Amino acid sequence: MAGPVRVLTVNAGSSSLKLALLDGDELVDDRHVERWGGEPEPIEEFLDEHGAEVIGHRVVHGGDRITEATLVDDEVQTYLESLTDLAPLHQPRAIDGVRVARRIAPRVPSVVCVDTAFHARLPAAAATYALPREWNERYSLRRYGFHGLSHAYAVRRGAELTGLDPGRGKVLSCHLGAGASMAAVLNGRCVDTTMGFTPEEGLVMNTRSGSVDPGLIGWLIESRGLAPKEVFETLARRSGVAGLAGGSGDLRDVLDARENGDHDAATAFDVYRHSLVRHAGAMLAVLGGLDLLVFTGGIGEHQPPVRAAVGSALVFAGAAIDPAHNIHATEGEISAAGAAARSVVVRAREDLEIARQSRVAVAVHE
Image 1: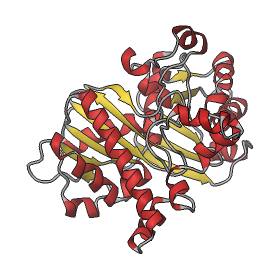
Image 2: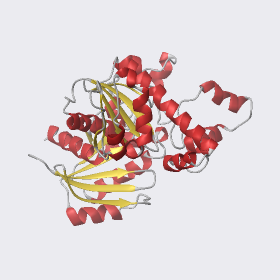
Image 3: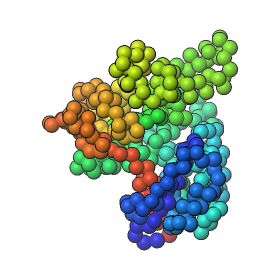
Image 4: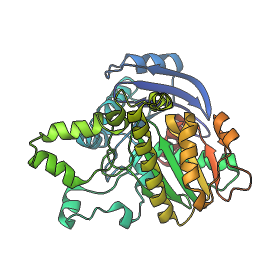
């Protein structure tokens, strides 16, 4: 399969489906199904209309075996299904997409591109939990990290926008959306990240608490009699910014309420901002400095106050964000003149990264 090929990218969320057809880097057509329950019709209709030479699927969790874009066969599909309990919101729908594509287009190669692959080469010191060695080995416990497709694209595109070499330097990639994570990238390799074994670890998010003291969880269950299921569902769905400010946790609503004097909204944003700054500082300590600060994701792209808060806290590392550029940025550099570290906004394009990785995987097997 020589040269650029037309790739259908299938990005299944917990309840939605995004389809895109890419010819090289050109978007031919896309479709967004707001509520998708795994039925074949949207994918079948899109393929009937456009065709494709490769189908690339975004899958959240690849476990310890799928560490790069991989052609799907029965064994790969079964293994991915076995990981459902590690990402119960997203893994089942992604597998539905794989199953549908393989059934309706059996002669078109399907490739899985997993979010955890970007973090598969974390140094052992960053990936290993300080748990009994036999637990880590028996249960494949490690820091897997997530949002890898977004981080991979953002780092490469951020370097392109600023004229830097994507394979060199110290990059802090901030994927900030309803789910959020940071990745420390040194000379093209991810060396640390904020999410861990599951997407619950790390930053405060819209409805997720991020990292909390495990002793607190034990205390709620053992001393206060809360059911484990209730505790973990609350940490994932009713915590974070939503838990502190009320409502959905949408940061736009929180910022508006804060401007109108809402105390809870102000506290929620302060906690959110502190979490960003705290984790960013940890990532920079691992990197040993900063050459490029990248913002992507719905909040990273569209919330100048969040970018400004992070940038102002990282002045010690050479970051400086120009207020005028920051306010008006949709994609591009927002660095202040003379800043030692560059800052940039990148429009999230997981579809381009899925297509790129899918082409590589198919070419390797030709």
